Image (cartoon, rainbow, N blue to C red; front, side, top):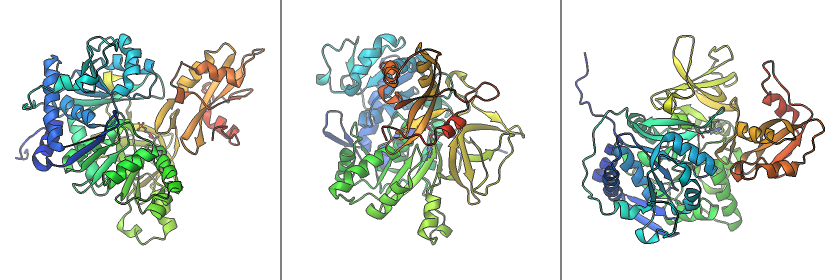
Length: 546
Ligand code: AMP
């Protein structure tokens, strides 16, 4: 017997229509690329999202066609979130920090038809547009009078001229909630980047879950500053949860430095902020010597990389701000766990509470976790046994875009799980803690660096026989890559020559901080480089840049 409740698909257009109807006067404030502050309301977002939908129809884009963005966190980007997905197209947010060749590769792979970009990124577009064979329309996210006359980009249009004269009335199409809504590429451990393809259903369920009190606890009384970029897993889903709850949104635009973030928090009464540890490090470094305090900030979600204990202490002891440590992945939309204490933990001494707060936290309803050993046996939840962390749930990838990569594994009962590449413990209260990473990638300032790319460039040098890239702890960037190199017999190469060889072949920030010449690189039985052994060998190594 089926239930007798109304069957309404969970669609992203419903989120923005709800925001318009129920908290239309709620504010959305953005620092613009031009430097000034733009402010309007959720009703304005809804109105202009409908105009975006019309403008896309006007380009004759088909259902599920991809519309890419190369943009900071700002109001026009937000309108594209709702206008593109709501009208049945797929929003493809591209990370502008990638090397232009990688950006072109990703745009071609996604078969983007339209690319909307902030003017900051005009030089990138000028470098890649001739290589992006599927993009038919280039939209500069600016006023008509800011459009450069001689950009060299064919048929470049300004966002305001493109969508500004469209009708503000639009009937959002109704379709299957499993339809793709947005996509985000992530650097794989092997091969090319792969895209997680989110659906309207997964995004809406994630928006509900993220707003829960023991998750991000987002409400109509919050003013939220997502410093986490909108090009990185939909800014952790915050734009959708804010539309659902009526929270005020405050967008930092290109200003991610300590001073700009602090000013946005204070000027806009921000109660709640979210970002990677590096951003908060920059904020604290700015505040301390200037003797500054927060007047409204209460909580901050920190994730993407492990949050250092000193940061949790500084926020609590010096600024009376609660840090919520979170763990997630592009493949998880991204939230998996969040560290909020249970009632019984509130009376624990400070040190015991701190031990818990350093963990990545408890699973959110909707995400199932388990840890397994090499044989696939589930490990006990005792906080000591560790294993590969597997997850499943309605906002976890089942497959990558175009069926690449086969991401799931089956357990002994035939149930499919997504292996995260993280190694973790889980304690009796369900708190998960990441202890290691089995995947071969480095995370610097919240951004991935593929060790394989770094190694491939090194071995392309005629003097290099073998290269292994590992991450080394760094106080600001969390991790920085170094490359261990075995020279070819009788070949000569210096550290500086090899570092210079990287110039232009990868983004500047992905170039390793150092080269360490070694006689051999430890290999396993199958000939695979044993990075764990190499890390052990280099345990006393100190980064010159740290
Ligand atoms: P991404 O797909 O770029 O969001 O990266 C996801 C990966 O970042 C995870 O698989 C972890 O390796 C790492 N990560 C995310 N959050 C945390 C955290 N709180 N602590 C440690 N590592 C984290």
